[in-house]
Length: 93
Image 1 (spheres, rainbow, N blue to C red):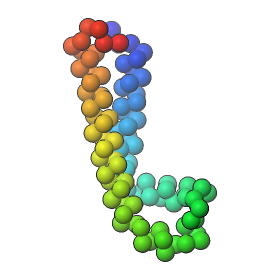
Image 2: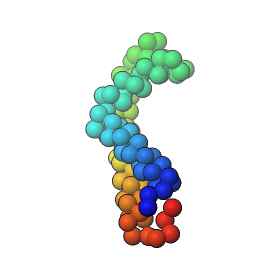
Image 3: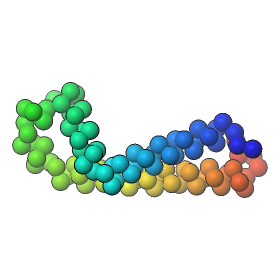
């Protein structure tokens, strides 16, 4: 029987996988979101200092790829644990 906890953990794992996919494989999309929110929240706005964002572009791209890979690994591990627990462990929630 699948419990509400299992469904919530599965949904969380799928969210992590989705965000990890965007960060790891759709880097341009992630950077576009970052620039949009940096305009509103950052102390160094992209419109005020575009050179800073051009200089750090490759670094930010690498950071998004590494972070996305970590999220993909964690999401896959969590989803595997939920599936394993649901199918093979009787005391799993």
